[in-house]
Figure 1 (tube, rainbow, N blue to C red):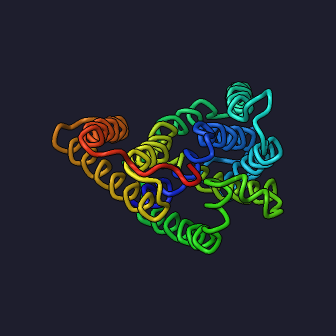
Figure 2 (figure 1 turned 90 degrees about the horizontal axis):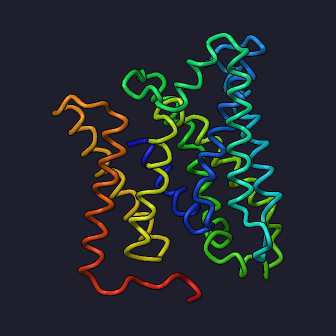
Length: 265
C-alpha cells in the first residue's frame, strides 16, 4: 500500500508527459550504481550502496531534464530514455560480471524481495516517501502544470529543465527505494497501470489521483489474496491482478459515456 500510494500518483505525471519507460530507465541506472558500488567493495543494502544508487539515478535525472524538448523534435525523448535503459543495463551486466555477488544484485533488481521485507524497512521507506510526498504536494500545482500543460508552463517563463530535474530526482529516489523491495516489473506496474485506469475515466487531476490510488489498492489487495489462497509467487500474481483490473476497467469504460477530454482540448 505504501508503494501504491506514491507510485500511482507519479504515474499520472509519467502518462501525461509521455515518458512511459522512464522508471525502467532510472531503475536500471540505480542498479548500475549498485553494481559499481559492489566493485568498490560496498555491499547492497547499506547506506553507502544507497548513495551509489542515488548518485547514478541523479545522473539519469539530469540527462532526462537536459533532453527535454518544448516542441517535438526529430528525436523523441522516449528514444533517449530507451537508449539510457539499454546502455545502463549492459553496463550493469559488465560491472556485475566483475563484482562479487553481482549476479545476485541484478536478480534482486528484477524480482525484488517483497516477501522478506522487515518492519524497520517498511517504516524507513514510509518515512522517506512521506517526506517526498510532502514535497510533491507542496509543489503539485507547478508539477501538474508542467506535466499536463507544458505550453502554458513555458509561456509563464518557468525554467522547465530545472523543474524537470527536480521532478525526476524525486521520481528516481522513489524508484531507487522501491525496486529492491518489489522488483522492476512490479514497480513499473504500480506506476503505469493505475494511471492508465484513471485516464480512462477522467482528466481532472484530483479525480485522476483518487481513481489511481483506489484502483492500485484494489489490484494490490487482490493480487496478495490470490497469491496467498492459491500459493502462487507474490510478485507475478500482483502484476497479473493489475492486468485483470485494467481489463475490467476497460470493459466498464466501454459501457460508459465519453470521458472528460484532456485539459486544453
